[in-house]
Amino acid sequence: MKSLGFLVVAAVALTSLAAPARAGTNNNPHAQACMAKNGFTLEMWRAHRAGTDQQVQSYIQCRDGVSASTALATGRKNGNYSKSY
Image (cartoon, rainbow, N blue to C red):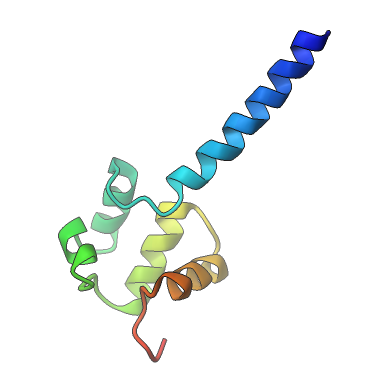
């Protein structure tokens, strides 16, 4: 019974560590597919020439699998938008 409890705790710990690692990573195939969907490349993203603020927000939503409001907050926190957005 103790080993089952240990396995459950270990699984939860690993899951909680894995989720933040995916969020915000721009150089994996999923993120690059989201970039292509929004009309820009990894090089454009790194050069801060990824398109409009709306495209950037749509990309963050796709990359992280989050709502529009969460994507907006993430983009603002990371400085991904123009100053007026």
